[in-house]
Every structure is written in structure tokens, then in C-alpha cells.
Image (cartoon, rainbow, N blue to C red; front, side, top):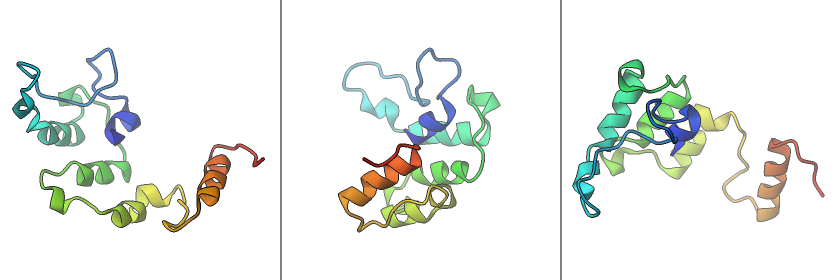
Length: 113
């Protein structure tokens, strides 16, 4: 999802989407098992994979998020600490709902009510 939002997805598709395997039927989820490899290929060779390049630090975050082994992917805290996320100055994890709304309004240039 992050990669699609940041790049617009695969360039040879009409709608924004990530690189995905072709399912042969409704339950053919095995066809999607290597989608992480497809996304890694888009990161390492965007032109050869009909993708737009992704600049650092976004590229390293997306690469970490789409690793094959879920246990090696970054935790919530590690994602928040990544240079790409640090740049948006998220409120602390223990922030109240009001604090989060205030942050969102300020981040989008909306005045508080």
C-alpha cells in the first residue's frame, strides 16, 4: 500500500496497483506468494518492471516492509523511527485522540476548531 501511494503503482496498469501474480481462480492465493519479490524488483529496477523510482528514505522503508519473513520486518516503533516517518514528526505513541487530531489538522494546514 505504501509503495502504491508513493509511486502511483505499476505504470502499465489503468488503476494504481502493486505488482501481483496472476490468480487462476478465486482461491488461487498461491499465485500471490511471490508478490514480495515482484515489489523488491520494482524497487531495485523500476524501469525494467514498469515502475516509477522511489527515492530514499522512502525506498528503504518500503523494502523493509515488504521482506519475505514477517519476523524480520520492522516493528511499529521501528517504522515510526525510520527517517521517512521521522520527517513528518508523528505525535508520541501514547498521544491522546485529541492530540492526534490536532497533529493531523496542523499537518494538513487546517486550523484547529
